[in-house]
Length: 182
Image (cartoon, rainbow, N blue to C red):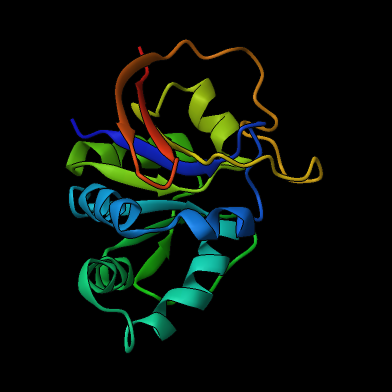
């Protein structure tokens, strides 16, 4: 059985959402960490908003991205993607719609190998409720984001109990926290 690994940027106050505040911290160490995480996955699991944002940005990056970042961009553009959505009907960027029963569809995908989910949003409440996320990778940036930014785990009821499995410090001040779920 594969794992579902969720990875997201988070500010010191627990905010996510529009991560323009994180851009100064996307350095070579972050790129290497992200590349290794993405390379370990069979596919990506994305919510609608994350899919729309990433699919609009990444194809155009392919021509100019170099080094590890270029490899990351190429992998982002070619890896199979599954999108949880009730509104989108057309997909590009090597993506397809996740089945109507999201829980069963994710379980079936995990049976095929590891999945990575970038971004945090409404889909997470469902994934947490059904204990489908096996690992969380939080890139904690040394920044206080505006209070208007979306909070981490918005809409989640109950407190998931996580175990700290690893900590990676980057020279930029970012700390990658890897947690496992019971």
